[in-house]
Length: 231
Image 1 (cartoon, one colour):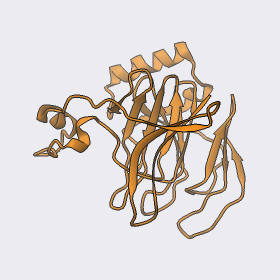
Image 2 (cartoon, helix red, strand yellow; image 1 turned 90 degrees about the vertical axis):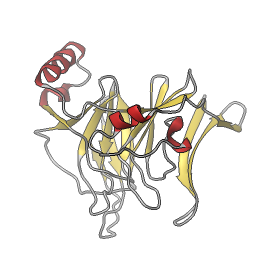
Image 3 (cartoon, rainbow, N blue to C red; image 1 turned 45 degrees about the horizontal axis):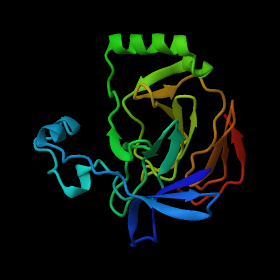
Image 4 (cartoon, one colour; image 1 turned 90 degrees about the horizontal axis):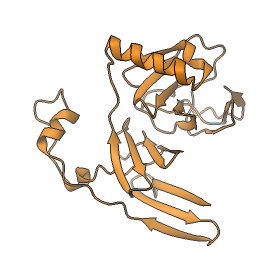
C-alpha cells in the first residue's frame, strides 16, 4: 500500500539527493523518512572498507550512518523488508556500491560482498544453491569480484537474486547481465546464455514470475531503442 522513492537530482550541475520518501496510497500523501543515524565509524572500520589504501578516507558526517551518497540513475529495489540501492552517479563519479535500507529498524547499512570467495566458500555456497534452487540458471554461473561501475542500468529481484542489466560505465553502454545474491552477498555472472541484446542505459525493466523484460533505452552513440527483450 506504499511507494518508496530514493535519491535523484534536479538537473545536470544541480542538486543531487540521498533522501528517502514514502507515498501512502490510501492516504494519498508523501512522507519523508528520516533513518536513524548509526554510531560513527572508527578508522579501523574504514581500513577494513579500503584494504588496499595506505590511508583510508577520513571519517566524515557523510559516512557516519552508512547513508548512500547522493546520486541519480541508480536502482532501488525491494527484497522482503529491505530496500537496496545499487550504482548510479553524481556530478563527479560513477558508483558501484550497494546499500541496504531496513524498514523495520529504519536504518541504512552498506553491503560488502565476498569479492574473492575461497574455494571452500564457493563449494559451500554452490551446495546451498543446489538445496535451495533459487533459479535453474544457477547451473551456469560463475562468481565474479563485481561488475563494472554503472549508471542508468535496471535491476529486478527474483527470489533472493537482484538481476542487473545494462547501464553506462562512463565509456560504453553495457549489455551484461549479472546477479547479486542478497542472502549470500556474492556477485554472479551467467555463462552459456543464448542470444544477446545491444548495450543500453536509461531503459526500463520489469519482472514476472519467470522472466525479466527490457524495453527501450539509448546507447553511447545516441541510438534510441524501442524494442522489447525477454530473459
